Image (cartoon, rainbow, N blue to C red):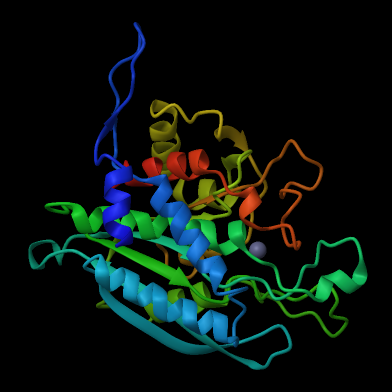
Length: 321
Ligand SMILES: [Zn+2]
């Protein structure tokens, strides 16, 4: 029912209204109403905190959605040590898109994390830091955009480059600010660490051309700088993606300013798996703190999600396929 609704709302191919001096840009198909609805649906489960019922319900729903778009879905299970050193169960959800003819071609990896942070570390009041982050932007927005990309891939007649869409688990399980025990390293991005470690141990695994990770891609004032790890490991692809954004008219959002390195899922995909991978992440170097005001607070809700930002990010991702 929803699918039909989205099709009515969104013409498959949109053309830009072009000014006198502008060239006609053929816009890749992407429907932000659909991406928005996918974010609302994730929010309806409640915070997708690992080990919770909402997290499991969301995982099952994500698997169903990818299958409905024609993906062959793989559930990667494993354990990683959490910030205390205890075993944390990981469920990465991987949707493989392609045909037997494209099976041997290098693939494109698209990733986002679907878990939400158990602690609101950035709340001013200490007692508020024990709440779960609702995760409309931090988690659901990247997944919502990629579910709509999956739906568009499902509608395509043929896909010349095979694509894997990966929903990583436990990205946001890094050591809580309220924790006073001994510090461990690499407590963030547990799902992508597991995926990248498994990948690097399989010499016969599929090869990837490059990857894109989306994180916090829904805010009305979104600002995506050139993140430093992406520049270090995947500069050509970062330049290519930012050039496409500029051509599509999103040059102000996809800024040419360089940011500090940010530990996100892309880091381990680059560092452990050796796949060039670019992070599209909201990090405003014009602010003192960098991350937006709602980041890791109870305010990370639907009021901070904008359809026009989702549209911009979706088109930029689709332009790379
Ligand atoms: Zn986060």
